[in-house]
Amino acid sequence: MFNIDYVGLFTSLPPQLAVVLIALIPIAELRVSIPVALGVYGMSVPEAIFWSVLADIFISAVIIYSLGPIYNFLAGRFKFIDKFFNWFFGRTRRRFFRKYEVFGNLALMLFVAIPLPITGAWTGSAASWLFDVSKKKALLYVSLGVIIAAGIVTLLSLGAFKIF
Image (tube, rainbow, N blue to C red; front, side, top):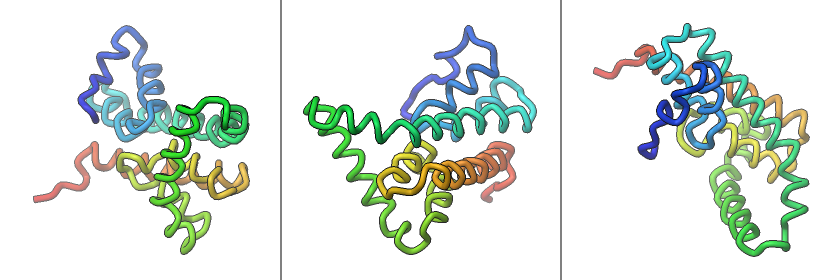
């Protein structure tokens, strides 16, 4: 993704920590950490899923519980930060609103479960705040989406879905 050498960034670290750090990177998340864990570090499937899911759920909890207070603190204080939040939140609203209208909180889980760029735990956690989903429900649905995405990415990484 974006020509970043994720393995090279963390060469001096233990594989488990490298996988966790890769999973914490926005956009990369477990879409990159699981294939790296399996293909580069030779981790077992359960170990690759464990470290990747752990990191993604951790960052989701951090975002869900801190985004509101951070936004309230920064709003209006810094123009460039306000501009970034307006761009990011507007984009998230446009991508997620119609799905949320139709499916409710299940849309949050499905949005996170689709392992494509910009549909992971980071954006799903931000969307939960934007749509005023309770923190506990948001963490539950985002976590379920992360687990589903981990299954899909793992199957893709292992070649279970070969297109001929």
